[in-house]
Structures are given as C-alpha cells and as structure tokens.
Image 1 (cartoon, rainbow, N blue to C red):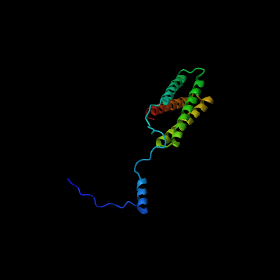
Image 2 (image 1 turned 90 degrees about the vertical axis):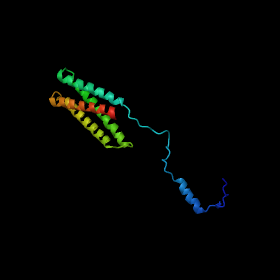
Image 3 (image 1 turned 180 degrees about the vertical axis):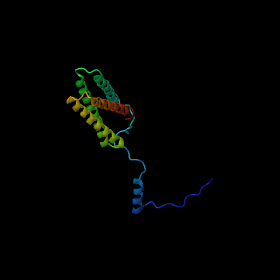
Image 4 (image 1 turned 135 degrees about the vertical axis):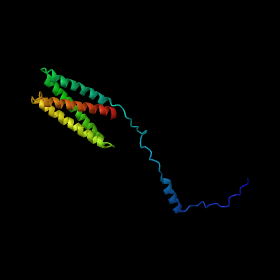
Length: 164
C-alpha cells in the first residue's frame, strides 16, 4: 500500500491569541489536587479500648453502688462519693471528646447528642454527689439515680467502644 505524501503543513509561528488559549487549556484539570504532605490518611473503625476500660469501671461502680445499698456499712457514703466522682470524670471526658470532634472537620448530630449526654451525665453525677454530701444519700431516689446514671453510662461506653 502506497500513501501519498502530505501536502499541507501548518505555520510554525503561533499568534499571541493562540498561545493564551492553549495556556488556559493546559492549566485546567479534572484530577483532584495532589496531597500537601505525606501519604493519605485512612480512617479505620477501630475498637476503642479506652471506652472498654471506662465501661468496666462503670460496671464495677454499679456493682458496688448496689452492694452499698443492700449491705450498708460504715464506709458506704465514701464509696458512693467515689463512684459519683468517677461518673463525673467519665462524663466530663465524654463531653470534652465530643467537643473536640465538633471543632474538627466533621460535625454531626451524633456529636451534638454525645455532648448533650456528657453534659447531662456530669450534671446528674454532680447532683448525686451533692445529695450524698448533704446526708440524703440513703433515700431510694438517690439509689435510683445512681442505678440509672451508671447503667446508662455503661451502655453508652460500650456503644462507643463498638461503633465509635
């Protein structure tokens, strides 16, 4: 097969308008921009062992809370105060961890709900602490408050450990 030699040869000198147009087309790209630094970060759903530790502490607190009401001894109020203090610390940690998540890139309804639960737990534990300190820690309302607070916090910690 024999092909004919080309007869058309475009001019080599480009005009200024042609250069501007080609520069605009060269700078446009549909590709995502390259990462600024380091390899891309891959987010994994990992099991959160700190929440498991807090859940175990809350389960022990629930056990000793009910033990103090079923078999009262002379140090029952001190144990209740220690349990409420632990609840306040865990609730404050829950609140602050969700607060820092809210300031990060992702803010969602789950973060707001986590902050609300942390604040409610902290206030409830503080109320229980005040009731025990005031000498009203033997009443059934205080026993119910502790059971509901510790049980709810226990469920919440194992939820965070499992699902983040």
